[in-house]
Length: 220
Image (tube, rainbow, N blue to C red; front, top):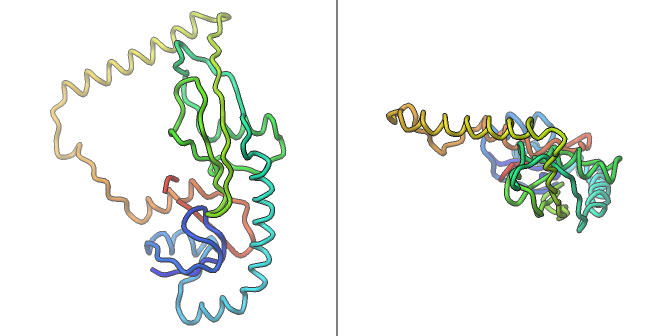
């Protein structure tokens, strides 16, 4: 389906673009959330009538996002996390990066976990990692994070138990897989239906809305 964007999307396009998207993504996400109009003759005329006012709102939001991007561009944020031999207990997710790292240094920054892209996916080991905040298709900022080891010796037995439990669960999963014959029911496909596409994009797009528009895709 062709739609006219009335807000900037994180990856697929910007205000005024006419783009082709899946029907489900358009009908279940873009249109009801005010990000797009169906590109028919009636809506093309409607878009021209609202274009000046809507663009003013989008431009205002763009300036806010550019300011946010400039505050984190090129910066390095750090935190310590429980680990053993460099392996973290749990993983560092976009939510952790926003709440425990970025907002620790810049408390009032308007940024969401859905804006964060970790180049290597979720982080499970200490080290330095490259990340990016993607606000719209054209507005983004790259930054780095450092995860330092906290091999706490205050409760070594607890830490050891945590990792031992993880190791046991992993072993149990492997044994279960070895003892189970594969069946047709276990097979999965890479097909993504319209609703799952909508869900994926929603994860990447809780943005700061402009009254008339917006978007995106979590891993495009």
